[in-house]
Image (cartoon, rainbow, N blue to C red):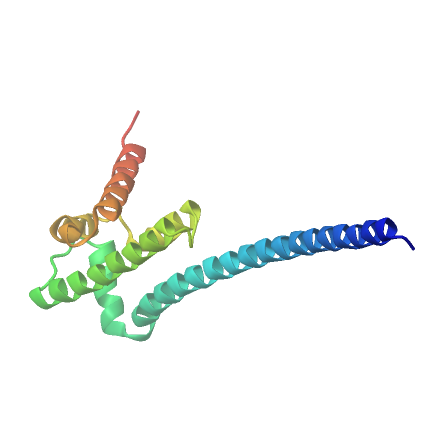
Length: 165
């Protein structure tokens, strides 16, 4: 073989190696993108599950403790005046629910849950209830602007859907 033929052969082998490397990089890039999508999906599922677990714990407290059940019934389903102790307990319970919503909103902002799941989680706050709204008016200053705006816009939507057209 002549020097030129050796040179051509080595260049062909080098060219083949470059093509093989590009194919390998393409496959790895696709696999990385698929893995990133799966990781994002797992994060979303985990975030939503944590929010649902929190709602379940709030409901368990109502189911398992007759005093909590009586308070929640009185606060959400009647217009009876709450005692000072009941007001205090209700305020604490609502603050926990508002914080729950705040965490959901934070996860929404970070892309961990979508808008539909956020709305679903916020429904547990029961924004249509007058006592809940009164409590929100007192504590909303403790939350970030985006979450406050979101909750206030949901209240406006509820009011608009309740008003006769």
